[in-house]
Image 1 (cartoon, rainbow, N blue to C red):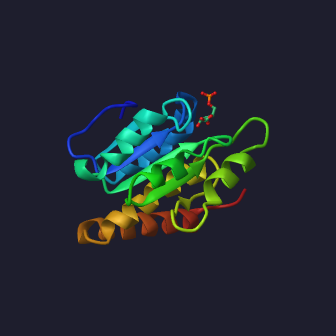
Image 2 (cartoon, rainbow, N blue to C red):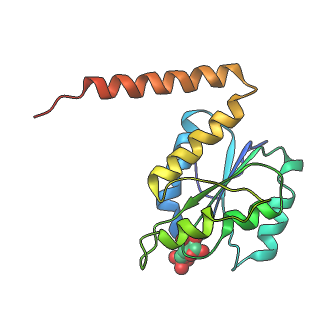
Length: 167
Ligand code: RP5
């Protein structure tokens, strides 16, 4: 799905602070597509487009979005800013940064003071994929068919590991 493409009635918003995050965040997009979750991907920045970020996230719940995934690098703090503007669950994905390898992103995303939570995933691609899987798990709570898909995904993953042979 192309970046910024809007599907009708998206359930998940995948936000990222810069187009430079897309190479990693496309993995969240692909995972959500694999589970047939309606979603939309947008570039919105906490510091470069602060007003538009606040406006988008403030209106997300009314548009039917149920989970927000927010990825950013450095000290950008997009996930925390998003969480400040919505009661929807916000999943933060720290992007790997050039200077500190994502440790800066991780700390600025994970170290939220009490009261406004951000569920923080791993730095980079594993975090992008797991954010999508966690969004699926959140949505699956009230959707038995999605729970079954998640169980099948886990079973296939197990089978793949068990089929591995070593040279
Ligand atoms: C953050 O700054 C973005 O999330 C990105 O990871 C990082 C660098 O952005 P660019 O300078 O590449 O646009 O806001």
